[in-house]
Length: 309
Image (cartoon, rainbow, N blue to C red; front, top):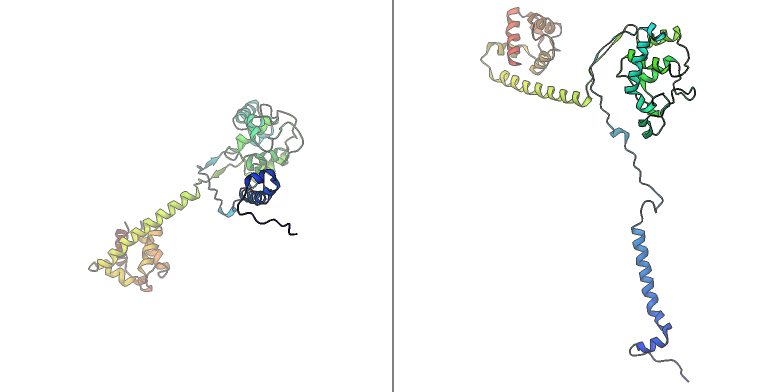
């Protein structure tokens, strides 16, 4: 007897309600598709944290450009080393004023390293009273080195913008906050030799590299424009006797032009002649010019001076 059921021509939903297990064949594929879709969505929207990784944010150091700060030069007066060894109350008072305006915000009122600005630093400012843990040391030459060069890794800035005397005034005040090692003559001699303290020193002017580059570009552009003007005159003023003489004398008129405007002989005929005769080829002239009279030299000189104005 064949008990196999015949396929139904259509779904009888009322019958499905009596036997819900039959719905499994329809619901399972739907759940499978839904779970797959949710999984794909989740994977595509994983964050870096979910991947347990972090994108590298290091900058190529070759692309970093730190320009020179513009500074006006000057002459630093000599340091009175006797005053450094035995500071007066006035010198110490000056040091306190400088400390308050330059150091107090980080190192605090009494040098305990508890200044308000120091709270923002990764490394806590130095407790200037504590005897241990100093990077450069507490001797006077070591304190001066710290103010001169700074300690970048600790967040300590350089105080090179202060004069040597002002730096020693700050040090003299610091030495009143607690007991520091005594100042010795050998230390003062060594510092004097290293920093030229007793003789004073001069500081050159500094301009940013970007500004220097711009000046060079402008100067080069100005010379190029001037050369075009000179070249035009050199090629067109053919009836000028001085022009004819220069064409006869020059082996390279470009060299003649640039050696003339770049030298310091433009304002003196004799210096110009002596400079060219010492090395005619280097100045763009033919060797025959060494035989010229002073009158011929003056015609060439006047022509060049007029053409390069």
